[in-house]
Length: 267
Image (cartoon, rainbow, N blue to C red; front, side, top):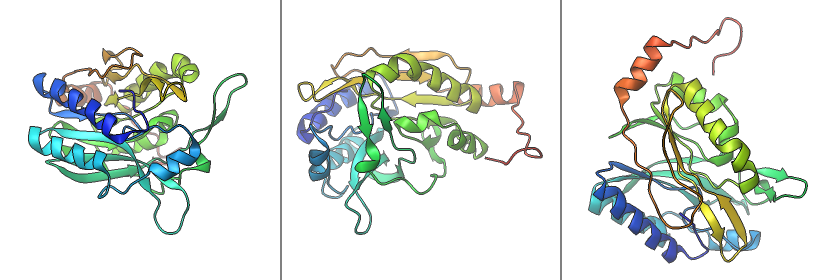
């Protein structure tokens, strides 16, 4: 998916993805970070934000979920709570047309690579304040994260302790960091949590060049194997894989990763 600053255009892409997912027999569709919009500028990011109740994009996702009886995970923008002038980077879960879960990004992407892209998410977004408890879905018990959270192992390890079988990482990686870090980080998180990692990624050139994202959406098995992968092209496409919960339990039984909480704190 390659989101633009126009929500209706992005919803049209999702409609294509839902059709593909339903035709493939999928029970859940995972969308990238900022799937509702990617703006031209920091100022536009703030002006485009709408509440879940007012967002034509989110309402469209709810309609599609209900119509096609498919679960949808999507990264979106939400207004901040209280009087803050910042906004929230949120991952929502939609089931039977209702937003049933929401997670706010804990770790914000502040980066200044020499000769490369610069990012200051902390200038625009509020930090999340809590870890969402993993929740049951038709495809298994899910834990939600977002993009830059991928670099931190603590929360997914906590999710594993709480029984998560699938961890979702909706993302919008830059090209320089994606080429080197994207796959290896996702495989590491899957191996250490012994859970499926599903990472839907923004891909391509946004708004005629205001931003470029790496793409390469991935589904990783609890053994660290790549089950499905997309390329970096902009056309709306899906990657399909079967989630085998018995495989999660077998891997955890055969290769028990016992935390030494007598030596270091429990996560």
